[in-house]
Length: 188
Image 1 (cartoon, rainbow, N blue to C red):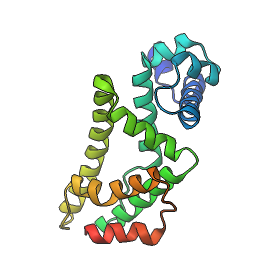
Image 2 (image 1 turned 90 degrees about the horizontal axis):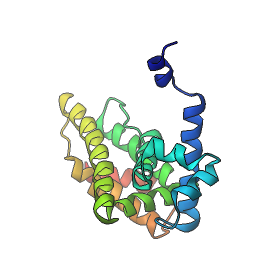
Image 3 (image 1 turned 90 degrees about the vertical axis):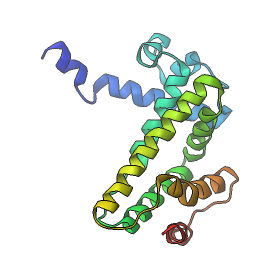
């Protein structure tokens, strides 16, 4: 196995360290909030050297952005059910499950903090927003290609995501299936 193949190998030590560091970040945000811990504390909690964190992510903001994007993409992927209504219901249910799960509030708070955390934080927030908007747009484009009328991505944000995020941030949970379906129905 050459060096390039070794670097691309999924799983293994690198994946394990990534998971440990991500979990440490999520725990620290849950316990202390955004901006109240250092790379050294993340590394200690994850059981890795500071240099491992810096080598892989460069700085805390980049690490936090990676945690938010990874969680977003892993827990709330874009579905393809064959209809826009089905896609939106599945997507909304996935988001609701993620943001009301054990680490959900911490991840929501992280995304909010990254969106308003100074110049570098704004760039991180932009990256998170842009990635999710790109994914939403692909789902909406698929619907249009099938001949279905589809709202724009901001409509999905305004009518489905924002109400769920606000409810979670203010402790107004659970997000019931009827509530989620109602959000989708009102949008469509």
